[in-house]
Length: 382
Ligand SMILES: [Zn+2]
Image (cartoon, rainbow, N blue to C red):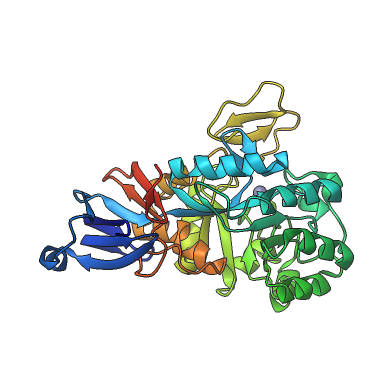
């Protein structure tokens, strides 16, 4: 008989709402059914079905990190297939069941090696699913470079784009671009034609330029407020355009340093809650010790020793989720930002919600939101 498992007496966080007294029936790698406890009590299960009493704990979809460079001493920067597999192995410890390894800007040769490393292990992962690739660049604004490498930046070049797309072998999910750079429109249209989701980031786009970007199909934004033109009351900037246009969604780093907690709350008041995506933007030495010879130190997030520039975060999705709750974001919204929203915006079917037919990628959290278990495709991983 196929493996079957039933998590009952659970409080479901469906990815949209909270449903107490529920049971999730898992068959093979999928959620086979979801029912309330009354219906569960009336069911006759085969002896082989493993029953797990959740004792009121929360069962939620696994987190989906759509912007992550590294964790635990491994990174996409390593351009090494083993590092990507290690990330996949480590991530379920932090409730992540799917991720989009994100590649920093670098000169073409390095960029292609990093892409190759990821492509070569897609489908071979033992832990969190590798959904595809997020390219953070190389067509970014030199004025909003943040922690990115300057010599990796490129002017729009459709042949370069072609080489990147070829290397990605159909696995390029999303790309961060600066909408204001010359010939972006041509680039955007090519990307859309290839099914790539475009997100505005590392950008100095004025309000008008952002509107033009949306006309060219840029409907998501990279780490809202960070490395983007801020809002001014006479020139609303990139930030103002995102805040005022319901059709554009955005990522937010939830470490409480990259963005002030009150601005995260403001964001949830300005934007529809289905347009917000929690990300980590975490770097190689997140959740592990930083070697002393590295130009980085950790003070709530990573900073560069040489100039104190804020780099990525040192948090996990679980930390970010805990932070959102601490900042006063409603529980179901915090879950939605980490699960069903990234799944929908990144066009990933069958993950991110507790719905029959979806993959049984689930996490179990106790009443204090501590992670008790991670399941991927119905298998208990953590
Ligand atoms: Zn990043």
